Image 1 (spheres, rainbow, N blue to C red):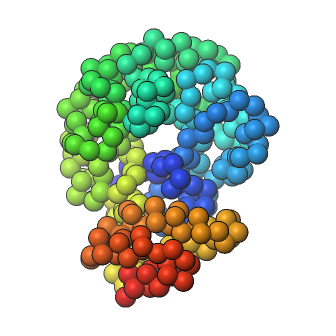
Image 2 (image 1 turned 120 degrees about the vertical axis):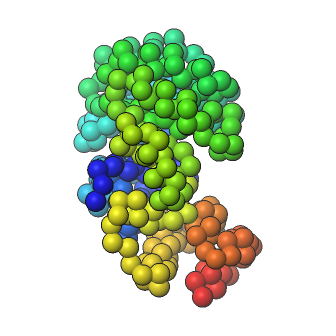
Length: 313
């Protein structure tokens, strides 16, 4: 068993409460779970109404870390203190979301060109909160040099952990990760750094861990959505034979489907959520495009169930 800690990356609309709860029932290897970001926390009463995600601090004994996307110190303080009262030990500030509709408003990775703004928010937030405060960011929004002033700011504050997705915001998820800049940034950082980006296989992981021998914390996103056994594989845990793996994945995806049907009162919207998941999961099948196309075309529950059964044949 290796010493590495593995974290589940947050994805809006995908790594929901339902997904995390069921994932941790079937699969092992993950040490922390991050919620998709909360936004628009104007009042605590508003947060109460939509915060099913914040009713549980652990899923099957694995710690949950709530995440916030904001450029308003008061909003972050409100969220942090609410989470603290609910029993959470840590919150995470999202400075990594790459999507233009977010970044253009100087939120997510759009704030990375403005270290003075980040510094000001941290100064206020950290004097009015006690909960552990971690940050997730990218190497910059438009330019790799943006990460270094950010590291300088972070080094002067009480930050518990920094997760860096080794791309620029404007890249979204395309192009290569920049290993050289990540390495340099992680070495200049005086707090624990978590690597994120392009860990799809054990071989990817082994290459990164050789290259970054100062890193022992890793965040996995798309790779885990494609192969739910990936964290266990990385940690060298016992993995069932292929047929049993198939059976476990079938039970897992069926449990998620039934949970969403129940949660959404049998509205067809449940199928749309499942299609999002299958967009990634289909990649672990022999004919990914064929599997996904078949599921993508479904409109009723019967059609969806038939398409899934065909995929597992």
